[in-house]
Image 1 (tube, rainbow, N blue to C red):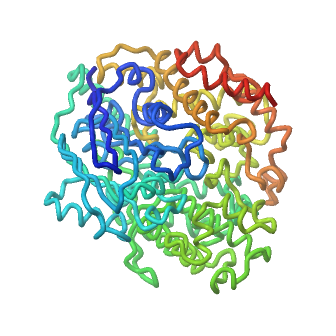
Image 2 (cartoon, one colour):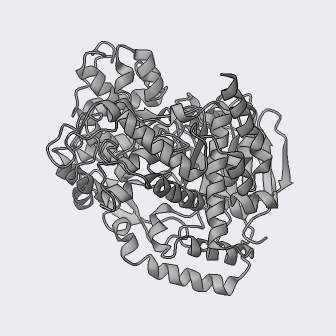
Image 3 (cartoon, helix red, strand yellow):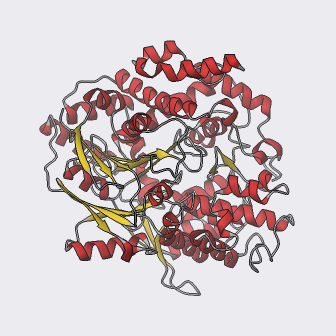
Length: 623
């Protein structure tokens, strides 16, 4: 097969031993690469019930079959997969930039990190040369600082680095892994797993050529997609960027504000994509092989945060802005910069700060509890101070670093009802009370609260369905999009380019065939996407997750939208959620408890994993 490097690298951090095994071609065909391959490898290389911070929990780094090629947005991606310290189920997170390109050119489809180093180390992958080097001098450094130091000491500016910050070292459960200084594998706590292994960074240099099966046809397809990416399907990303969503969501309204106390923000104009681009965006750049260029780099020109520079997307802007009642873009940019510095998921950090502010205003937390911080909604100084405390695990930050779910349980006194999460992962910027297709997608997402596992908000926001009701058929809509999204994240191509695949699965099948030489149909690609969702579900089932975990945050189900307008009074009742779950499980071919049936697993050629479903069924009968 072309496209694949054909090799998986194993690194035992405890012993320092490494070995390479051939890529299982059947796995490649069935699970594609990226998160699909990663989740299947996680099942194979982890034991039932393992603790996320155990040395025996593997951290798996994968590329996709398109990685390293010239394909627009597909040449650059990589994914990290492990058991999540937030959901205790599948943890996975993707990132783009140039790191994935380099890893593929070094000759690997996946790297499996096992064990725990005795002291802080970094791994240096230079084609076939693998070294585990002392990283004591990098302790406490930000990912960007670590990247610069590693490049200097290895003597090559073009080395690509993925690193954790202080938060990862201190096992902050929402720690992320940052490459190319501002690109983050941001969600589900993969940086904390990396830190639990005493692994500070991964440095890569690759010199191999990446070849495809049909280069001439591939080049013609690339040219076609370059033109598509200049068109309307990507205009938002090329111009205002995802921050354009602020005014769009505020108008409906469907933007969670002040920890879900509202669905709209009176200060939306001040933190809009339009204002951001007019006052703060200094340049727009792109990843390796990208034809779009979407990375909006912001610089604060004046005031207390003058000189702060970072990239900005809708989700962190929403989390540190409207969700906390903050209408100061300079402070939001500073909060994002601090998230990058400490290496924490900026979405999760903002949601946790919004939670603290709600606790403060409800008298659950006091200034004394917060080391003197006046954590009122809208206080931008409190936002900055709390992000710092989370990153350092300092004071109240030690509890908040456990993530909003565990923090709510530890604080108690009703705080758990103010902690808005799904499966332990903090919510994102879509008010699920009034986006009921999205609510289903979020509830069943195998990695917890996440808009990027399904994209079902699109049906609601664009008016393709009545967003305020539940009805038969929403389950299949979510299921079909999920299957397409897992393919996108397994190939790996950028989700911002999804609209340029005019023929959907047919275009993806053609791309895969041209690269690998394996002639596949759109239906075979659809089955691969479905298979990946099922293998993720089986991992979660093995680890004890099930229908009880396919639920929604407390406020989504108990606090109707108070804002005037079309969303007023909306919420999701338990009856509605049960209806949606039954509809979704039926569309998936799962039983009423959300367990894949034996017939479905056989249909997907997953006979070797039937034992997981059987074991779950036997346990249910025992009860």
